[in-house]
Amino acid sequence: MTARLSLGATPRPVISVRHLSKAYPLRVWWGGRGHVFQAVRDVSFDIAPGETLGLVGESGSGKSTIGRAVTMLNPPTAGTVAFEGTDLATLTPQAMRRMRSRIQTVFQDPYAALNPRMSVGAYVAEAFRLHRPEMAAQDRRDAVAQLFGRVGLDPVFMVRYPHQFSGGQRQRICIARAIALKPSFIVADEPIAALDVSIQAQVVNLLQDLQADLGLSYLFISHDLRMVRYLCHRVAVLWRGRIVELAESDRLYDDPRHPYTRRLLAAVPLPDPAAERARLAAAAPAPHGAGLPGDLVEVAPGHWVAAED
Ligand SMILES: Nc1ncnc2c1ncn2[C@@H]1O[C@H](COP(=O)(O)OP(=O)(O)O)[C@@H](O)[C@H]1O
Ligand SMILES: [Mg+2]
Image (cartoon, rainbow, N blue to C red; front, side, top):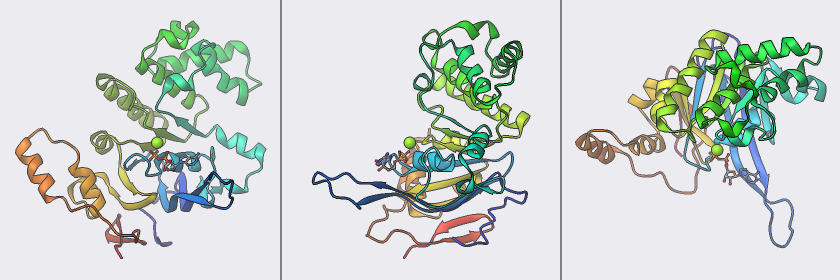
């Protein structure tokens, strides 16, 4: 991928990822060192203010690894992540701590994120206690109550504990904490995957409302391709740790170019069985061979596809 990868983001991107790679050390039974598993290779993308970039790909393709690398929860082994123009790798630990308030993550399992022994109000207030220690207790309570209202929860629930809530309510609590410090960028890693289907749309709509109100940018990681099309402005398709296609959502779904993207989209069941059969038949065979796709080529404005070698 080249420097002309502007990806349509005319204003300064909120997040700018270049040549990001992540290798995990392999533990082998003889205790050998130096063996690594390359989970993500040479991934580049920008996300503009107020934009949602979807990241799709099968399980194990490296989606969560990218999510953790761009938030520096698990930093990349190569490449750069710039947040609002600042290369995160250059920050001192103190500066990174301050930056953390502006970059947040919402995870798949809200129950695991919450502390079972802490009231949910205290959990949300913890964001202020950690990052705004000067805040008075009453101001903190008011701010938390306001956040509860913002995510569609009655503030009287603040004194309750995580087990007293449904999955959707718990995810709302995690979202309240994520937006507490007025971030500009949120990584949402499968945020609806663990929720009842009936609840998923409500949480997605909440994310959309918050984006409109707060100008948030999202990296939305999901294997729910329909929801991704609905929610995301652009979509990146990840295959074996590489982006093989990146385009505006409608373009990607209507005119997928990479064989892997076609296969992925063909796997989405369509309501009409005849259309589904036709779609499956039209799908390209699985890409194979040892050679992973090389650089991305811009086949149409803003539509990038990995060149096949
Ligand atoms: N901490 C880790 N140590 C070693 N390998 C890991 C670690 N985390 C993830 N992996 C491996 O990296 C690959 C990508 O994982 P992940 O990013 O979780 O994919 P996804 O979120 O798309 O399912 C997988 O093969 C996974 O087994
Ligand atoms: Mg994952």
